[in-house]
Image 1: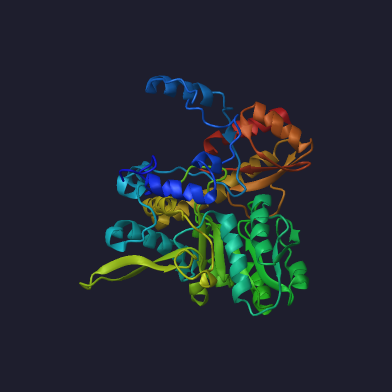
Image 2: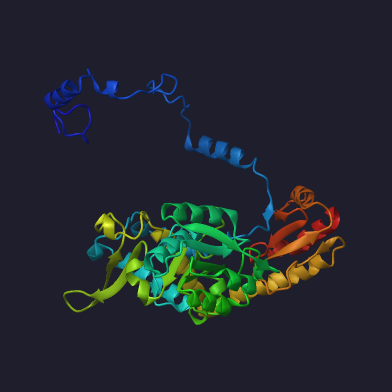
Length: 442
C-alpha cells in the first residue's frame, strides 16, 4: 500500500487521488465535507489520561449515584437468576468473536448450539419451524404482520391486536405495518383477557392477522385462545400468539390452539433484565418455512456422511435477490440465543417447568397479601396470573408509586388508580418488605 494517500484502507496512489479531485473540481479531500468548526476534531480529545485504577474508581462514583431500587417491574421485561455456567460458556472466545456463521466448516459448534436453541422453541411451541432469533418480541410481531400480508389469500389490510398491548410494541408493529400498507386496530379486552364475543363481531374479510398474548401485558393467562384461533381461521386470517419461553413451559401448547405463528421473548433466559435489550422468538408451521425472516440452522451430512450443521435458509436481501427477500433483519441475536439455550439446558425440562410454576405461585401469593392492605385490591382481574398482576389503589397511583420509590421499590403505573407488580425469583425475597411499604404509604 506504499504511495497511498495517507491510509492503508484506500488503495489509491497520490496521482489517482489528484486525478479524482481534479475531476470533481476541489483542491483536497477536506473540501468534500462541511463540518462546523465547533464540532470538527482539532487533534485533541480533551480527555485527561488516567490509570486503569483511577478510571474504575471514577466509574464506580458515577454508577453510585443511581437509585438503589428493588424493581417489581415487568410488562415484557423479566429477570430470572442466570446460572454462572451461562457466563462461563458463552464468554469463550470462539463464541464472543463469532459473527454470523456463514462458513459452516469452521462454525460447527456455534451452529449446533443455535440448532439446539431452535429445537427448544419447537418443543415449547409445538410448531415445526423456529428461526435462529430475532431482535426482540416487538420486531418479531412486526415480521409476523408482514408475513401475514404475503401469505394470506384475504384482501384485507387490518391487523387486530389487544387494546391493552404494550405501547412500545404497538409502535414498532405500526412502523412495520406502515411500510406494508397495513392498518393496526385494537380489539376489546374483558377483565384482562380478550373479549372473544367482541372480537367475533370484528373479524371479517378486511382482517389479515389476529394477534393475542398469553400471558397478557397484565400477566393474565388467556383462557380462550382456541376460540381466538378459530375466529382467525374462519376469517382466513393469520393467528399469531405472543408469549415467552418460561411461560410456554406451563401454558397450553400454541400449536394445540391453532397458532400459525408464535412470537415473543426468549430473553427471560440467559440475560439479566435490560429494560430494552431483547431476544425475539419466531416459530411457525411448515407452510411458511420459506417465509420465515432471518436465518434457519439446519442439520445435514458432510462429505463423509457425518452429521453437520449449516445455515439452511437465509431470507434477507443480502443473501438472495431483493425481490425474493422476506425481511431486512440483519445482525441477528446469535450470542444471546446461545445464552438462552445454555440457560434452558442447565434448567432442563423439569427445572424450566418448576421456574414457570414458581412464577404462578409467587404472583398468586403476593397478590393475596397486597389485597389484605387497606386501600388496595389485588389482583384487579379475576384471572390466573403469571409473574405479574394489576393492583387497584384508592389513592392516586402515581403518588403511591412515588412514595414506594422513596421506600426503595419500583412498580409500574398503568392507570389513575392502578399499579402493576411483577414478582420473579430475583425479587421474591423482598416481597415482605414490599407489602410493608404498601401498608406504610397507603
